[in-house]
Length: 329
Image 1 (cartoon, rainbow, N blue to C red):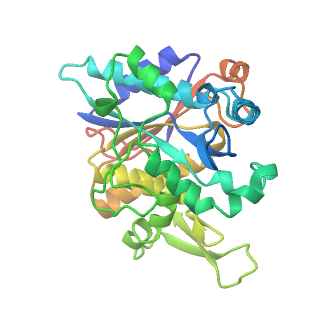
Image 2 (image 1 turned 90 degrees about the vertical axis):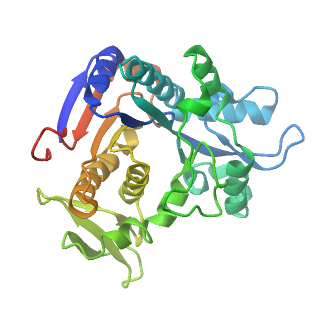
């Protein structure tokens, strides 16, 4: 892994543009969470993106949801999406232009955690699956704030946004056959039958007892070349790192061998582990050269604009350029 620090997003953008060495790159930007919104203005129970810029203040319930989203998540989603478009613009100016697509990853499981919206958990728990499925099947357009950013950049969503369509891995009932979103829940559900099955015979896998009350539950770890271990499962289920490994493998199956992921602050450690593991799996098991660049500095849960300005930006590189003989560790 190599780490680079930048004072502003201009330096970060220049670095990311130069980092891309191939003809095609996926940029994970505009990541957002779903939150529960109670019946309001004639509409029933539903999930909405926790993007405060897109939540009106035309009712008491809407104002409460808007304030919650702004306090919890700040500007990360819109700011990271805007940066993704900025990077795409730079890459399209190359001759020949780079095929750059924005991948929208959605956290569609945190809303069901008891501590997330505790006062609304009674309404959520009886409807978790239906709420999630309804969002993805009825919300076929990107958030309004993203559409406005695309208009400012003079880009078309059909060209800029990567559509999530089945390549080699079947969609579950969570998502329709084609949509502009990638579901974290779906990735977690598919991890065991896809990526974990693919690497099950690797001598890199190690197992440990889970902290759960059930002694039979094992956690799966991947031992990297440098000897460090990455936990792929937590309490027997796919964890954050396992989910991101699955996501990266999905993008690799779609012929994206270079990936730039703009990640909220609270996810950095897990995603760095996932990127390192994915690069090694791609090389040793799939026989592909994979490069991943993890970008942080646009905020996250509990971050405010002044926090972001103060801390600057950082990029973590995993994998090597085609001309290099070995991977960075």
